[in-house]
Image (cartoon, rainbow, N blue to C red; front, side, top):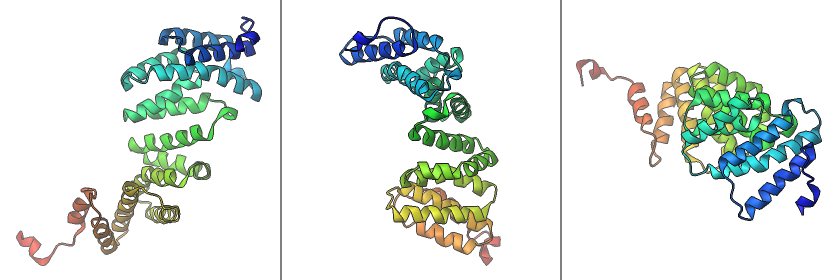
Length: 277
């Protein structure tokens, strides 16, 4: 059916039909290897300058054209190691730095590998190349999450906070309750490490309200959020409250062992402690 509409000329919309035909044949069992698909994708990239597109309809058609091939490549790479996937997409990103898909794949691969400098780099590249008109909410949500996470895990607390606060409204509107709760476990340590204690209390309280109101089932995030609160309480001179909170958290099964370390460190020293008891 699609072949009736494809006349073999490398015009904009003919490329879309060609891509759809390849994908349909793939779904019907025709074999394609990665290099074959990469060559075809590069033909598409060479034919249309994505960075120069400014018409919404053209941007969407071009994205859909490439998505057929890019999805097939993603599926063929599923059994490869993360390192092999990274090398594959780095090759594409090097040859076609203005094409967003390779950067999108790399930011997720490097997150899995816990290579946060490269995760941040790939996320920035994706943001700078992907047309704003073509963002899906799920993609933008992932971008915001990985930007905050990669900065925070590199110890770039000020950068992580600045990004989070700049995009706070967008992040909150994009994320459901569960993802928002998990997101705060990424940013709260940055507030703690810079001793923005009041910000910690405010974010913890609002997040825990969301947690309870939406009946979020995420015990790990609940614990991590409260650990951040306990540290902020200790740092602001409210050590007794911090210890009470630690005790509450330690009532739960399989609690984080770091709670014991904090309790031992913060527990007031008794009179006999100076004699070694």
